Image 1 (cartoon, rainbow, N blue to C red):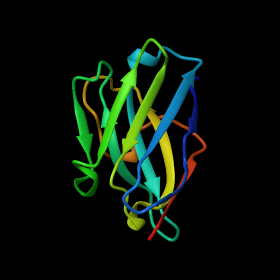
Image 2: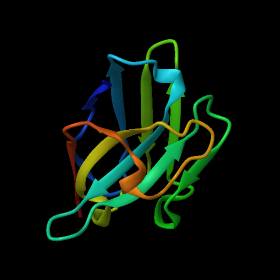
Image 3: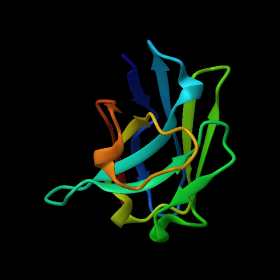
Length: 125
C-alpha cells in the first residue's frame, strides 16, 4: 500500500510561484505513474499534470501548460509540481495520486489507486 504526503502549498500573490512535493512510502515508487489533481471549492476534482514512471512522458491540463512543470526523483520517492505565473483560478486543494499503469500518464482520476490528503494553494489577486 502506497502512502502519499503532499507539502509545499500556501498563499501566494498572482504571478508568484510555488513548488509542491509529494513523498511516497510503502511501495515501489518507480512502478507508478504519478499525477497531480486539484479541486476548487464547489467544483469537481480535475486533472492538472501527470508523469510516467521514468519521467519520459508527461501530460498537462491545457490551462496550466507552459506554467506548471511536473517532475520526479525516483531515488527520493518524490514527485514535484513547479507552479509559476500563478493565477487566482489556480486556487484549489492539490492532490497527489499514484497509478499502477507506469508508462502512460492518464488524466482520469478514477484510474489512480492511491491518493494523498491534499495541500491548499491559494492565489490572491
